[in-house]
Length: 233
Length: 233
Image 1 (tube, rainbow over the protein chains, first blue to last red):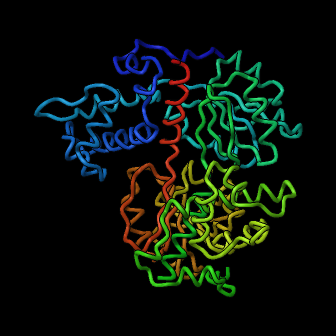
Image 2 (image 1 turned 135 degrees about the vertical axis):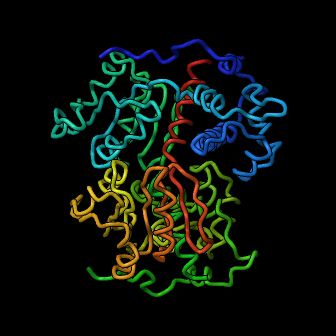
Image 3 (image 1 turned 60 degrees about the horizontal axis):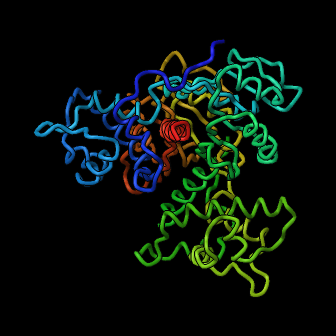
């Protein structure tokens, strides 16, 4: 399989803006990046409704933000709005995807092929977002060699070799709590740039590795609590 | 199948505290409830490390909070700490699970049995948290009648009947964006108390229905962005 080129295509003006030195003044707050996902989702929804442009006021109203919040958030990344027109949805979708990095293909390795890992392999949303699982590893010899969703599971000792030869940048971590420490050691040693963590443990990683944690147990607890509260009203 | 009894077992003093009238002064901030999950996870980890008690200072240190933050958060739910001892981990785990409502069995219906729904059915974490998927519905006649993970998929028109006859309280929503509106109408009409939403759409629901949204697309976008930023440093 060919290695993927992550940073392909000419850099947009927004990427160039991101290339500025990483000083306090240019660092983009996490909350703003998180809201970019909301703007993207809303712009995609507007396109489905055949709406081509939208003002910051109307966009804010749909999302429960003030117009100035919308303008301030998007100003971090460049000048998007057109006077008297507002934002052009199609352009915005393309630009936000470029900023977020979901306009390209990210080769991914799945670490942990138990129930959760196998469930995640069946989730088509990863490839929709450009995350393509091209390798899967596990520590359990009884699983190694099996085929799931077209991938032959390799032993985790092969991780560094796989990462280097396939140009893999991201790992999906889906191992049980007790296996996390050993798995993370392998991942850090392999040169991976980012981890999507489904394991129910908070990870501490070197600063140069991106981390996003998905804690389904936590979501379920929050849901149970809100149902309980409603029941007791 | 027998109906489940949600509010079984004697109410703890903390549940009684929750039963106080829902005024502004007794309403527990969402952020505090969200941190309860973190305290629970850390207490479970301490037990695995054979640590039976912990002070608020040490607990805070492990989680990156101040000791007073820990004490203030837990004080919402009652008096947990013992002078000179700190918190007893085993007691805390049991009490927090009781407060959150994950100490009991929640019967669940899966709404949407496409790729995502089927992946979720394979996720054992739901039952670990007491969420037991006992019914599955879809709108697609070519899927209705099929068996997945031991469940026969029913038509969504049967939802209200299933909810009432099986005592179901929670729905997992796993339909594509375009099917969300119709599915939510069915769910609201069925008398469900809480929704765990995996669909990539923000829902507006009646206030008496609990909602937790899981946006994997958003998590993936945040991950892509953090990897990009690291690459460009």
